[in-house]
Length: 347
Ligand code: RIB
Ligand code: CA
Image (cartoon, rainbow, N blue to C red; front, top):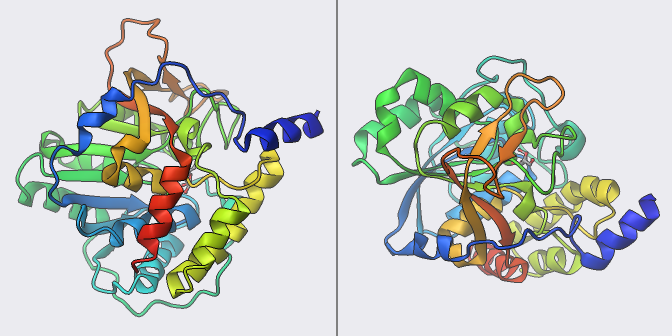
């Protein structure tokens, strides 16, 4: 059976090719109307795929103004994620970026980590070092609150790439900031692809389901990059070779990270490479036309031990629950990797 699955997955170079019908591509076409640089906060748990997302953002100053990076416990504990975020900024040649440490644990549960995917450091693959750039003294959750209160309403986008603990904590601590958020573009959830950390749940949502439920219920404009789309943004040997062929420190660092990162999904799914989950968030801000999805209702399971963290996505509109997210279902993978390779080549 595994051989059949591997053969099927390989033939389609996709994890379980289940392109959902009727993605509403028009839904994403109005998203880049404003051509000025978009002010964002990246909230992250690096994580090799988080690292590539941060590199893509820092390589795209015309489209993206990174106000700061807040780190959260997720793939690995907070001590490592805040260290890793600073390593990535140093690789990018951007030691001036403001990196903050946020929550070391979910809002109401014990932390679950993913060293089995990302390695003990969270950035296994390349040789690592102790970063010299500073960690900001201000707590990450306070940075999110202060930034949203300082910047004009509706001008800051939050880009969570890990568990939503920092965002949930900020909304609980300062409800006044909720209406000031321009948009949340997050990586998390799954519908057609089902779960990756349990049979029902995707990792980011599973780690802090209470935070995810409160963010989804906040009324903020939300765009979700679930496994349904990220499992179609797969590395391949040729795509990793293209990063290495850049002949730069960033290109080599990226290739070495991905050659480690992809092994888990290749073994699990029999695919040719690993899914670049988090860079989909940043690529969407730069070229939204690469993606398509549907405005639907998404609710989070927060009580059942069997399905905890499941994103109950009403893709087929079988309930009367109001749409609360643009839930992505497909991506132009070639265009995505062309963008990624070209931009990383600029660093
Ligand atoms: O399920 C994939 C997500 O969990 C990605 O953000 C990855 O970095 C991990 O955080
Ligand atoms: Ca992540």
